Structure formats: C-alpha cells, structure tokens
Image 1 (cartoon, rainbow, N blue to C red):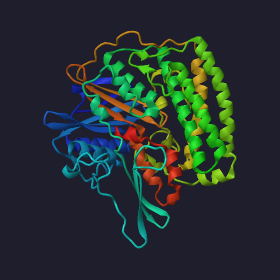
Image 2: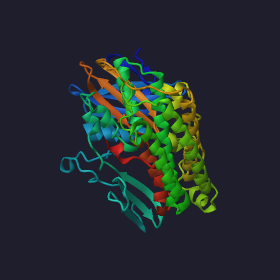
Image 3: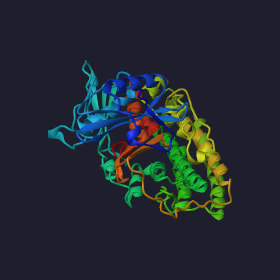
Length: 495
C-alpha cells in the first residue's frame, strides 16, 4: 500500500522514493490530513518530461514531521480549495506558471503577472473582483505609493467608508529568482538567496545553507549553528523594533516612533559588528558562517545589548501606557483564529490569533534544539495582538541571544572547507523561523547533483490574503495601520 513520505526538518529523501498518487488519491489524502490538523507548507509543480509533477508539503507540527504528497498531470487537476482554503494562492500560481486547470477553483487569476497571451508578463493588467450596488464605490491605491515603499496595488470595494472587499495585486517586484537557482549551486547562489527579501537576508540564507549542507551530507559545527541563531534573533529584534515604531507613527504617536527608529539602527549595528553588513549579508554560508564571534566581540555585543534593551523598554512602555494608542490598536483589523488556520497563516500574524506555530519549537533545528524559545501568542487577532506579539518576541530574543552568547567564551563558525558534491536525484526541505514567520525552501537535484528545481516560500506568500480578510467591514482609513501591523514583503512574495 502506497504511503506518503515523512521527513524531519533539514533532511532529505530520494526522489524515486516519493510515491506518485492518482489525482483522486492525492485529493483524498490531502483533504483528510488537513482535516486531522496538518498544515499546508508548500504546493508546487515541476516539469517532468511531458507532464507536471505536483508536490504538496504538509506540516505535522505535533510530531515535528513534514509529509510529502506527489501526483502528476498534463493539464488538469482537482482543486482542493473547498477542503483546504490555503491552497488557493498556490493553485493560482501553478495556473499562472504552467497553465494547469484546477477543476473547482473559480478564481484562477494570476498572483504575480498575467499569463494571457495579450497580457503576457504584465503585472496589474488583469480582471478585478467588483461589487455592485447602490452607493458602492471603488478605491484603487498603488502600485506607486506616496512613501518610500515597494510597489503593490490595493483595490477596495467600499460602501461609504466601510470596506466590503480588498483585492491585493502584486508581481511588480518579480525577478525570476527561483529560476535563477535552477542548475545551481553556483558561486553566487548564496548571494542571490540573501536578496529574496532584503530584511530577511539571514533567514533565507540559513534555509538555503541547510538544504545545501543536507544534500552534501555535511554537518556544520555547533558554534556555527549558534552564530546563525544569534544572527536570526538580531534580525528579529531589528525588524520588530522598527515595526513597533512604525505602528506608533501610523497613529500619530511620535515619541515611540522616533525612539524605535533610532534603536532599530542600533540593533542593525550589532549585526554589522559581526560581519560588516547591517543586514547580515555574507554572514551565513553553506558549510558554516563567513565570520566568527571571538571573545572580545561577544563581550561588546552583550554590553551594547544591555543599553539598547533599557532604551527600548522605555520607548515601548510609552506606547502601552497611552490610552489614545490603545484605542486605535484594540479591535482594529481582527482576524479570527479559525480564519487564520483556514488560509494557512504563519508567523507573528498567526500567533496573534492564538496559533502556536513556530518552527524553532515545532520543527526544531540547529541551535534551537539546545536553546528553547518560548512561543509568544495572543488571542484577539487585532492590531494590538500583532504589536503585543512583537514586544513579547523582542524580550524573548534578548534572553535567547544572551543565553547563546554566554554558553561559550567565543565562537568560530567560519566555513573553511568545501562541503562537497550534492547527492543526485534527491528531495530536501528546510524550515526556518524568520522574523515574519516560517520560511520554507525545497531543493530537488538532478542526476548531476545540481538543482533541477528550487522552491521558495516566504511567509508573506501565506499571509497576504490574511491582510485582505482583516479589512472586511473595517474603515478604509484603518488600512495603513492594518497593513503595517502585518508588514509583509512584496519582493519576498514576487520572487
């Protein structure tokens, strides 16, 4: 009897060991296992001869495993949208990229750019959902914005000031990055993955390195794993701090906005102290790290962290103690837990709805197997909850970094050896908890040990539709605040 393959995070399996199910078997298994509590990680297609092989990855968070389902088709597939709403974005992507028709999915519009011959390659040239009725009007925002922001188009269907529906159109940042990795690893591949989402350079570089190391049968040192974990937590600290300041700015509370803007810079400087780049470029590489943390640098990091944390507590406490700020945060942009689960939300946005999803604990890897983080959650699913989870995670990151740095006198993780050739015809998966949420990388090698296919799922790909949901029945003036409370990546989605 055929059974789905199950892997641990950061492991691999021979491609020929992944069973190929019929469409009906695939549909039944996926629907049943989602109903049993498994969670959608990724769903993508790969060309094999004259067919498309479809791979679905489901997370079993309770047992720390990743289940792989595989099927194949030439052009038609049963849609799982009625059973697993989270697949909609993925089915739309496969329709856009491969022309696969998903029977039962009635809204297969592109997620990045149109695939219609007369509109080929043009983002934003598409059909939009519209609402008819007396006094219903449409408001279009972007892709060119008034501030310094990545391009994205937001189309609101409104009745007066109330938002009935928000449609989000992306694709303006598409660089063809996944395809650039086909045939890799190249010498510049690790630099490419650092640009998937610039504010998550360490997160994506770590996911890539884990896959390459796994395929090469290479084990990095415990010291290198700690350096990577410290860098990931510094990335989390800097971005959460910046977001709390931006949320304060969106409601006109300038003290916290100003303080957090400065403190974010100080946190970025800590990463710059380690590797010479404030966004962690060059810090993580297959085989280890590009830089060490000797004893003197460790002491300097701890010293600076003490001052930064004190300043940050003072700045953020101003936010919680201001009644006007709390009035704007409370009950704004609510996402119920059941909706968050249905659409496959991850990261801080999911944890703000009461979903305890965090790959550092549910699919533990590297240093997290020794240094256990406390998962931070809230229940209300509103702007306040998303801000509160950020603050809880900031405090936890300070604790974790101190604990990791104090565990040794100094750290030498520098990669000084070649990791070797990659195993041919293998399937590898890595999950890394970035500051926005769960990052998923899948690498499939060919007969020569090169990447036949490389799939990247940034947490933003899961979460953009969640932003659309929280705007329903909200005032349109609440959009900037709700948008910032998610702070999703455009380029991380567009790839």
